[in-house]
Structure formats: structure tokens, C-alpha cells
Length: 486
Image 1 (tube, rainbow, N blue to C red):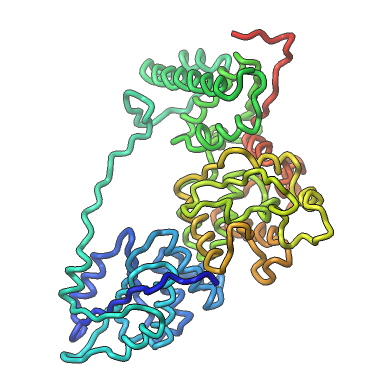
Image 2 (spheres, helix red, strand yellow):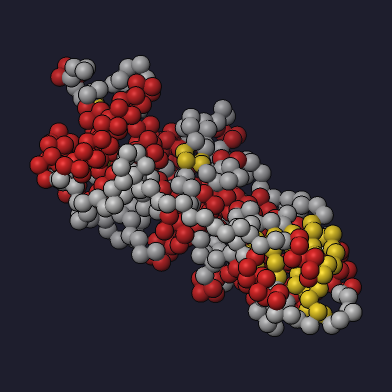
């Protein structure tokens, strides 16, 4: 176990007569950085762990269904609090808690560094000496304050200000709602829009398309001095992480795709899109599956490993093969990207602990991921994660750090035999369960025969090819003899 945060602070708030003003104050204090916990009356230590998880936004039904052990549940709660940067944990009616429950809450405060506030209903003149001693034994600097001092120490948060949403930040004028854009191929896309769209909407399409063509052209020139020597992995990373994936709506994604196709064609590259393979509303399939709504739905689970694996599987459009190679040092504390740099000594640096010593690391990789996917994951640049999903990766990293994991330790481990068995099969089942709960059915994650071709089954395709295949995109270089630069 890693060393806890020394000298955690705990404060007992004296509330003589169990005044209802304390309940109202707690209702108003909830918000970013503060967590209000209302323990179940007469509940056990396990119930308290579920109460803390439920206070972080987890679904009580999911928690009861998953049934994590009480020690695991408390570690999960501490991990989610760390990822959410919670600085104050406020517990209502804490005078009903047992000494063991008080120590469990003190353990969360030590792990996360948050201040623990215990609202303690007392009779006039009563002082909770026993609770102060219990907190001191649990490694906390414990004090007792009056309710008035509590209100002064924790003022009410400022009212939230909602900024107006600008869905078309690149446009000099707003578009309330995009119509269904034509699916004509990129050589005819602009001409078809000119015939079918009103003048103002056509001007908006032309404006965005021209901007994207210029941006893609400049990006290609910055990548290499030879326009034709473009690496497909970098192109896919740009589309996935910066252009198509985070597009605010399908119409914008379609315009960006057509512009990228035009800019690439002028420099000897052909990016083809086959929308007929994607069924109805193919433009909606261009954006990421890991939307803000999906990320919020993944937050209702207390299982940090399953949620983190689902984030990576949906973001990369692959199965969980290769996830066992990810180390804790590859994920930053905020979870905003994944960076697996090429190791200087593969035999020493990236050998999974579940791979036998007599086996070569690349033999293990061949069984679980292709060489192309290995080269893709171990790239030179960090792979950004959508901001809404970053706290999920941060929460699992905090969970592994609390278990004592260092930078070179694996990010995912087998839940029952860590370091002995490969965790990827269990992760795949967790991803399948999460996708089923979210009513998602990715073509690369299902147990039956794949009508789109067995190459997608179980995510065996390389990472960048799987992402493009899921969106019916194919890339090729044009014949040098038939291509002439602009």
C-alpha cells in the first residue's frame, strides 16, 4: 500500500438539538469539490461504503448488482473522490456512526487528502470526546467546532453561471439546426449542396469546408517535406482526436471529412468513405461513440477498471487486446491522454507480469495484438482522451496507486490473481456488460458471427485500421505516375 496523506484533517461540527438548519446548510453546500454523504440509518460498514459511492453519483442499483467487497468499495470511493478533486467530505448525522465506520471515513480522508466534516447532533453542553479519540487513532488531526464556525469556514458556493452554447464556434454566424446534408462524394459535395441548400446554409458549408481544407493542407505540410510520405496512423489520429471524433454534430463531421478528402487528394492521398455500409444516418457514425452522454453513463458504475476499459475500447474502436501492456506511468494523474512511448529495452520495460519469463515479449504481443497495433499504441505523441471521459481514467489510476502500483506496474490487473493471469479477457467481458447497459452494440465487440467480416471480431484489427473500418473509411496512396502535385 502507498503511504497515505499524512495528518488528514477531521472536524466534528457540534449541532445541539439536531437542528434542521444543518440539513438545509448541507443541501446548499453540495457542488464541485464538496461531497455530502447521508449514511443509511442503522447501516453496516458495507452500507456506508455504498452510501459514499452513491453520493459521488453512482447508481445504487448498479452498486447492489456488482456487489464489490467492502474493502474494494471503500477503495473505489476514494479513487472516484481523488479523480473528482474533492476537498471536503461532509457527513450528515455522524453521531449515529460506529467507531469502525468513523475510521473507514478517516481512511478515505487520508487517501484523498480531503477534510472530513462530521455533523454531530449533541445535547447542550455535551462534547464528543470519544469521537475525537477515534479520529486521532485513525491518523487524523481532529477538532470540534460549533455550527456557526462551520458556516463561516465553509461559505456557500457562488451561483453557477451557464455560458451560452456555441455549437458552431468556427462560424462567424450561428446555425440553429443543420439540415440533412447530401451524401454526394467529395468531388460533387459542394456542387450538390449549392443545388439543394438555401443560400445562407450553403455559405456556411462553404465557409467551414474552405477553413478545413486550409487547415488540413497546412497539417500535411507540417508532417513531412514529402506530401506523399504521410503516415496513415497520424492521419487517423488527427481525424479521431481532433476533427471527426469531437465534432459537435454529424453535419460538421461530414463537412470536415469532405474537406479533408479534397486536401488529401490534391497531395496524392485518397481517403474514401462508403456511407452505404453504415446504414441510416451514416454521418452520425463519423463522430466518437464516447460522447459526453456515454461518459456520464459510465460514471454510474463504481468499478473503475471496467469503466476505464470501456472508455479506451470505445475511443479506439477496438477490443481489449493489448490493454494489458498499458502501465500506470502511461496515464497522467488527470487522465487526459494515454502515452505509451517506444521503450528502449522492450524485454525489461513492457513485459506484462502475466507473461512467463521464458517467453519473448513479442511472442505474447503476437497472441494479443498485431505488430501494427503495437506500433500504433507505442507512438511518439500522446493520444488525447475526450475531456468528459478523462476523470474515469484518472479514477482507475488513483485506485491502482492506492494499491501501491508504481509507474512501471500494469494499469489493468486481474482482479483475483494480479500479476499472474492476463486481465484482458475479464476486461472484455466488463466492456461488453457496460455496452449492453448503455444500449451500444459495437461491431468489434460481440459474441456472435460478424456479418461485416470476422476481421472486426474481438478487435483483432490494428488500432488505427479498426477505427477507420468502423466508419467505412479506407486510405490509400495514389499511383505516382498518375498523380501530379497542385
